[in-house]
Length: 195
Image (cartoon, rainbow, N blue to C red):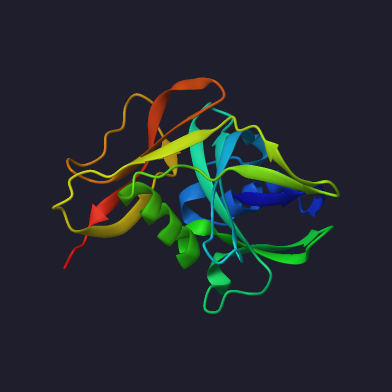
């Protein structure tokens, strides 16, 4: 379960997402100012150290993008190119925010969710009275695919095309719904090991 705090984050999550898009080659044709969040889902870090959050956002043209962020309490060694910003969390202090696709903790969680047929993490808010569950609006679930297939490289779709994308035959995959999207859409799959 992901435990959240009633806190402020500066830059805000939307500002972080805009910075991510504006700083990546795949985002050069996207206007970051036109992004709007449609939904989000989280995975659990088994060690409880890294926040793992994926956002579904709409561009100004209506296209759906998927953006992953990880939140860390210290810099990630060797990942300076993936750093989006250092944010100030009003409860946890400085948080180093990375493009999740470059963070091994995120990619391991994504891979495990697909190959194990898992789902998004539950969310609870930390309060003085204890943990208070948060109702989810975005849901994801893994489809393990063919057990005999040796695969180990997760591929997170940056551009989500509900109703048009299909995963490679036999590939473990991740599917999801969010507010305004009731039919499951493909979000990720596991690519075959090239070796």
